Length: 440
Image (cartoon, rainbow, N blue to C red; front, side, top):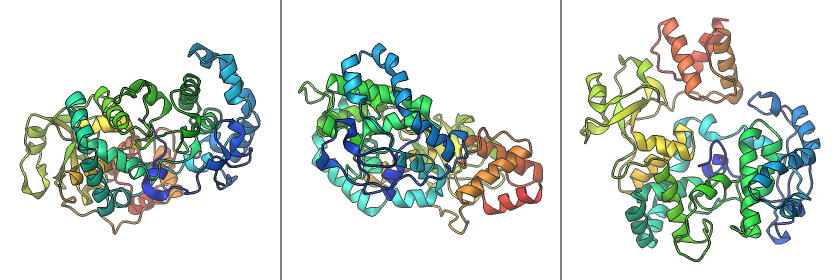
C-alpha cells in the first residue's frame, strides 16, 4: 500500500512530536484543516543533504524547490480538475499550504532499507506486540470472521499489518496528510509518485470522505491504523458498517474489511501461507536467489534446501523464490505468492518478512529456528553508498546509488563475489566493502 514511506514510524523510531507545525515554512494551521488543539511542535529540517545522494536531495535543491512551492502546487491544478476537484475546493485547501521540510530528513531514513534485517525484526516482532495483536484478534473476532468469509484473507496477516504499521494504532502519526503529500509532490526525489497521492488527498477532502481534523498520519501521508495512502484509500476502502462512509480511521468494520480488500485485490491466495524458513546449503548456486528466480519447492529440495526445524513442506508443487537476507550465514526463506502480495503493500523485503513472521507468531508459531549473524558489523549509510559506487566503478549495475540494499545491489554484489571466487550470497558485509576498496 505504501510504497517506500513511513516505516520510520512503524519501527518505533517515530518522532513522537510528529505534528502539524514544522520546519522552515510556516506553522501547521496554514492548511486551514487542522485545529490548533492537534498541533505539536516538530523538529526543524536539518538543512543537510539527503543521505541517498540523489541530486534532488541536496540542501540547495531542497531550498530551491521550497522557494518554488506555490508555483508547483498551482501546476497541479489541471490534474486535480480532471479528478473532479472544484476550483473553489482547490483554492480553499491549498491557499496557505507551506512545505514541511523536516520530511526531507525522514525520506532517506527508512529502516526497512537501512537497518540490519535482524535489528528490524527485533523492533517489530516483540512479545508485547504479539500479546497486543492476540488481544485485537479476540476483541474483534467477529469482524475478522466476516473479513475472512468475504475476502478470503488470513486474519493474522491483517492483524500483523495493523501491528507493524502503527503498533495497533498507537503510532499512526499526526502530520496533516495534505501538507505531507504536497511537500513530497514538489520537493525531493519522489515527486512523480507523490503527485498522485497529493491529488488523491485533495479528492478525499473535496468529497468529504475523511473529516479534515482526522486527516492526519505519517510523514509520507499514510493514515489510519493500517496506514492507507490516499490513492490506496480510493481504490480499496470499504463501507463495511454501511453508514455511508468508508472510515479506515475510527470504524473497525471498515478498517478490517478495507485492509482485507486491499490484499485480496493485490492477489492474495486464500488458504496459503507467505513462505517458509529454510536451511540453505553453503554449496548452493546463490545466483538462483532472488525474486526473479521462481521454481517449485520440489525443485528447491533437489538443490539441497530443507525446511528449518525438520518440518516437511505441505505442498511440493508450490512455486517459490529464495530469499537470503543475511547471506549464507543466516536463515533462508522460500517465499510464496502471498509474500509478493504483502510486498505490494510495501515493496521492502524486510517489511514483508516482518509481516509474515508476526502473523505466524500471532497464530501460535515460534521464533525463527536459525540464528542471524549478529556478529557482523552493520554498514553505515555512507558505507552502503560507497559500496554501491565501488560496484558501479567495477562495471556492475546497481541502478541509482542510494545507500539502500535492494535486489539490484545484491545482484551486483553476487556478480562481484563470483569474480573474486567467494560464495555469491549478495550479503553486504564489512569484509566485502574492504575487498571492494582494495580492488580500486
